[in-house]
Every structure is written in structure tokens, then in C-alpha cells.
Length: 348
Ligand SMILES: [Zn+2]
Ligand SMILES: [Zn+2]
Image 1 (tube, rainbow, N blue to C red):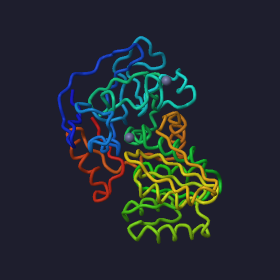
Image 2: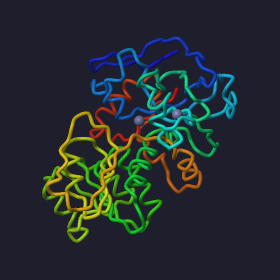
Image 3: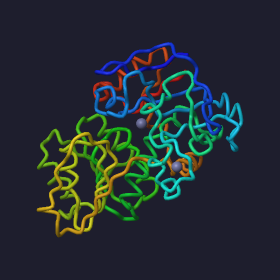
């Protein structure tokens, strides 16, 4: 089968690999029909994810058809169309029972990280019953790809962890697919909340505006003037919720400066270096800082929000390529701002 393989030191290639087989009774083999390229895949390629070694098939987002099932899978049938969650989880261990599937004792972020991933003709999914989701016919597959990771990350790490509430003043730092998902979810679920989006490039900020952001600011105009202008919108008080969706020292600094008294910083980013926490200015502001890797537990809810047209994850899909052009798909996503790329979907 065809597979996109991480070679180490910045390189990827398409290789011919053997089709995966059932290794545990709770496994499924899925014939992949659509897969997504994610910012996390770029982190791996740049050597920033030590848990992912060279030779790994990348990808943790996708949709496919069940091709084979282990004897321990109860709720799926061969031929079912399924959404592949980015997190694989048993649903039974203490972490799973607390809703922290990303810390599953025998699961977590495995796909395209510690086991072979979804950017291939076939993928083995551990704990299939709990890690795959039946897809109803009304949800198109490219749109569903955005529900594997981007939307659950935004919902769990941003909306839930940030405790977004009716009338909240919300600042979203970052205009990648996850930041824009957080925007779409806030607008759809809390129409009375007030949302400011802070990014860099004009084109993505324009998209944020079209997704319903009340105000947009570019840090290219200077960080301190951006903070001042954004806070002025809310009478200088700062924000109740700051969703940090970039993952750099600068974005974390910005998030801290935007947070108002009693506010929550909800960071949902992957950080690969340490950051400063400015307790000298925050110690008496009653703030809350929350971090999270997505658990994927919200996927059933997000599927219902999509089926009811409350959200449209398809709006995130900017480019679709066939697998024979997957390298072009990566190039497009790597040059995201020049290419106006959001979610890049590959079909097989
Ligand atoms: Zn992802
Ligand atoms: Zn578990």
C-alpha cells in the first residue's frame, strides 16, 4: 500500500508498505478514503516531537471504511464509514473513565506518532470501538476530517477549558485551523459572547472576520499596540477567556497580557520550549491557566452539531489533493499563509 513516511531530519517520502493486520482483538483495519495534514505533522517533520521516530507513517486525522475487525470489536461492522479520532483510547482505564482519553493507559496519541498513522491506504486502529465514530451520510468526508482533531482540540481545550459562557469577552490568539475552529464554535454556541481574534497575516484575519469575529488585530502592527487596541474594545478590562492557539513564547506572553481579572487562559497548543509565566503581574488577578491535549471525547457531540448545521467544519477545508499529490499537499500547508491554506485534505 502507499504510505507517507517520516524519514527524520526534515524529510518525508511516499513509500510502498505492507498492509497492516489485526494485532489485538480490539483492533480494526480501516481503508482510508480521506486524511488531513496537521500542524502537528509539521512539528514532527521539523524534529520537534521526540516520541515519533524515523520510519513512521504520519497522520492522525481521517475518514475511511472498515476493512477488517478483530473478534473483540462489538459496535462496528465491515463496510461502515467511520471518522478516525486522533486519540486512541480503551474507554475503561482510570484516565479514560475520567474523560482524559489522551492519557489512556494503553492508548493516547498513538497514530502517526508511536504507531503508524492515517496517511496511507490502510491504517490499524487500536481500541476501535472507542476510537472510531460511525459517520452519517449527511456529513461529507472532507468536512469530517476536521472533526478528527482540529474541532475537538478547539472545543475541549478552548471552549470547555476556557469556560466560555454567554456574554463572555473572548480573545483567540492564532488563526490556524484550531483557532478558527474555536471561533466558529464560540459564535455558534455562545452568540452573545464577544470575540476578538489576533493573528498575523491579513488573509486569515479576513477569514476570521467572515467566521464572525467582531474585531481582528494583526500583531504585524506591533505587539504592544495590538494589546492596547484589543483591550480598548473591552474598555481596557482584558478578556474573560483567552484561547491560546499558536504555541510560542510570544503567543503565551500575549495571552497573559490580554487576560483580565478573573480570566482564564486556555492553551491548546503544542509547546516544545519553556515559556515565562508572569506571576509578577498576574499574582493578584485571580487568573486560571489550563492546558490540554485533545481527548476526543467531544467528537460525538461535534458530529451532532455538524448534522444539525450548527457548525460547518467543511468551511475549514481550503485544499483537497489526491494521494498522488500528497507532497504538494504538504508544500501547500507548509506555505500556509502564502497559499491561503487552512485544512489540507488528501483523498485516496
Ligand atoms: Zn491534527
Ligand atoms: Zn484507557
